[in-house]
Image (cartoon, rainbow, N blue to C red; front, side, top):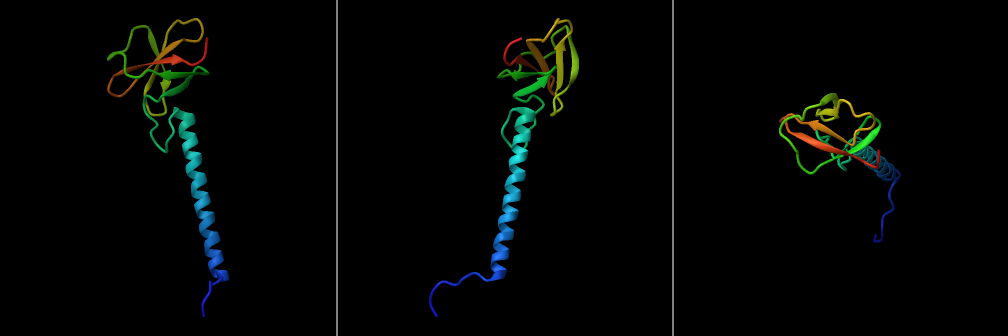
Amino acid sequence: MTGSRRPTGVNRVAVFGAAVVVGAAVSLIGARVVQVHDDSGVWGLFGVSETPERIEVLGREYDRGDRPDVSRTPPGLVRHGETQGGGTILVPVDVGGTPVVIYVRDEDGQVWTYGLVGGP
């Protein structure tokens, strides 16, 4: 007998089940990628760095510079929490408003400069 065979009921259920599993996996991976991006500004599944490309501090967003600027903490800064990756957020003591520049110190002691996104 020649010709194409039609899937049986069992095959249809298996194909449908596989499609549901693949769809759920794609949805979960997509949600994780968006969460990591919202948290760190980086598109990926992992990689919440100590010094992410973008952080939110004091209700504003700040972008990281290309390389660490100094190997020790500048004077006049106070600790203001941590990044999700564990970097220490440092802000100027007396700014009198929204600071234009803040800093993040990583575990190696390098200090990264972050600039305010938008305007004061």
